[in-house]
Amino acid sequence: RCFRCLRSAARCVSGRVAIMPVQKRKRAPSAALAKSREAAAKKRRQAFDKAVETIAAHKARGGYGKSVVSCWDVPKGGIKNSPAYRLVASRCGSAVPPPPHLRAGAPVKGGFPLDKYPPNVLVDGCRCYWVPDDWAQVIKNTGPGGTYKGWLSPEGKFYYHRCGYPSAIEETLGRKLTALDGINGIMRNVRQQIKPDADKKFLQALLTPAERRHIVDASKFHFGV
Image: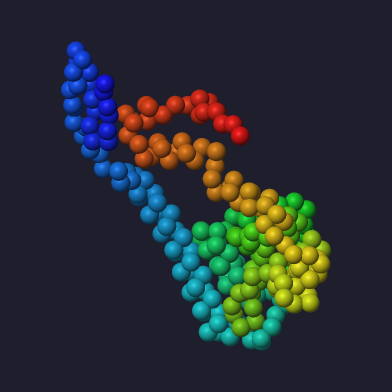
């Protein structure tokens, strides 16, 4: 009988076992893969640093010059130069965020029309697990120069809190919100981050040409429940 282990391979010759050493291969990511990951991480760090820098600068200048501003107060210098814009960009992992409808915070279906959003409100690059399909998660600029995360209802009303206040979302809807309310948003976010060919691209970048020859086509895999 022939046995194979992690450190050696066996070959049968006339009923006898000949042990052939297997060359070890370093299992670290390839140089190209490591470089790609580092570039992506650097891009995220730069976006985050820019957001922190912009918020600090706006606070130092006194923000709007008042403690409270509404969703309809136009930011000084334009929305793209505001702390909220830089924060959304960093939460999207880039210097420039994608269009509003492609961000995680956008409504999954229905919702308040994106082209009618108040000038001081931006669709967020993230989305809480409990947000209903027709609601949006948004970011607005604050009076002192900072930012605030909130939610926009299908009617276009800005909400500051999920619960705990008479005007909060759950109190307004009259029920608790759970992951079941936000499951479609969760799945959309997963599909945006993990494409159907993600495994194929990963294995092509990680494995050697010789190793890739042992990977069968996706059509050869069958799953059942």
